[in-house]
Amino acid sequence: MKKMRQWTMILLTALLTAGVVTGCKSSSVSTQGSKESGEASSEQAAGTETAGGEVNAAKPADGMELKEDIVMGMLSKHTTVDEMEASNTQHNYVWRMVLDTLTHYNNKTKEVEPWLADKWSTEDGGKTYTFQLKEGVKFHNGETLKASDVVFTFNRMEGTTACNNLFEKVESVEATDDSTVKIVLKSSNLDWPYMMTLPTASIMNEKACTDDPTDGPAVGTGPWKLDFYEFGNFTKLSAFADSWRKAPNAKTFTFKYIPDDSARLIALENGEVDICQDPSTIELSTITDDPRLDLISYKGGSLTYMAFNTKKAPADNEDLRKAVAYGIDIDSIILAAADGYGTKATSFWGWDEFGYYDCGGYTRDVEKAKEYLAKAYPNGGASLEISVSGSVRKTIAEMMQSQLKEVGIEVTINEMDSAGISTSTTNGEHQACIYGMGFNVFGDDARRILQPGSAVNKAHYESEEVMNLLDKAVAETDETKRKEDYQKIQENIYENVPYIPIYFADGFLAAKKGTGGIDIYPTSHHDFSETFVPVK
Image (cartoon, rainbow, N blue to C red; front, side, top):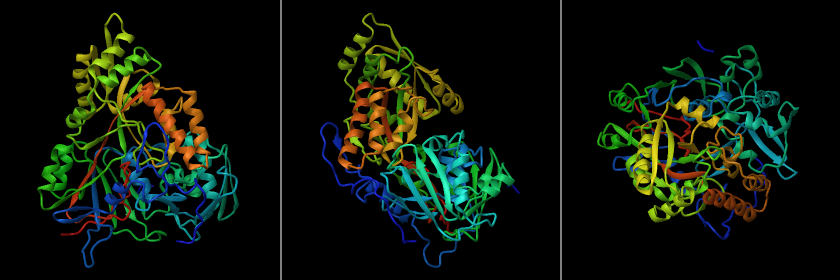
């Protein structure tokens, strides 16, 4: 065996009503903490209507007999049980079930609400936060949640793969008593309560981590606890009877690694698994035609994009980047790479992220592309290498290769595995790459991909203007001014083209008929804590 509702919301910004500014067009999903924001995704979270009835209902029907052991077929494998060492889709599934955060983002109301913290407050414009913890919360090892566990968690973040960026924002964290924590940030940050909802900000138990550094990080307060794991094969969770949250709808939940798309769907069809992660779009009709299965779809918040290495020739040439931007046809790329199941991205920002503005996107204009290329290469001979990983991104690169040849740019494609392209692009060895990122709802989340030196900044883009605007916006209490700052950032990216946003892919899960209780996140980092699967 390996080892509420009395609360005080703080002022994050002024009441987030729609503001009007010039330049890029405002979107109706640009409000933060408002029911107006992301209505499409909140509807998907509640369930999608099909001819067979409601898919992914929130609760099982009265009298429904439920499976005690749920199995999910996974596209990617687990490599750690330490939340601070991984922040990706497959690991966040586990963190949301096993661990809890101080605050919680409600996908339906689009608001931050109490979780391990009953209430919180700030009195100095978002620099100092005081969190009052919920009483009587138990960890899986029987320990009671204390403020010292929160202090331990934040101190442990230093130098970790997934949490060091949070640690670097904190000046001090202290337990003023057993149930009260004061966090002082290095600078004002109105997004801090939103950042505390991220799975990587989950609270650990100090005793568990000290007694067992390997498996102790997985001892949480969630409704599921780590039972057994075999990396590269499966991770098994079991229900935690003493959870402060509602009891799970099953006794065990197993994540089974099945990387091949067809094999994963076949496993669902033959009953080996109950849920299939990310079925291939070419097999969606197979799912909808099978009366034993449900297809759960949602508007995804993960952006597929092209990044130019602005520190390396030839991608350091802005005119070349603009030639590429106007030389490709994004609509046809979506049809080829995503079978049409995607939305063209018109700004380098999350559609569900605060401060989003529609910059119009790039439309193919061969003559305009040739004009920019002539500035970059008056004597001709333009070439560009695009690094990719995976069949879908290879298809995107192949489409670009064909389209840009007409413009006069010779494209070569460098295929790599996922680990190789991650390392290569972080180190700046690439010329350009096709990559992806899931944007969270708070505006400052864009900092991850724009911060110089960040592993997520695949363009290695450095802009003093962008960083000044990010710093200003995250401390700005005037909503209109904050939106204006975020608009200027998006216009900067649009004009300088370190990135080309391509599309937001629709997301899919396939499941046994009647499966529900899945809290759908546009980022694809769903919460399966309350999942249920009918026996019949």
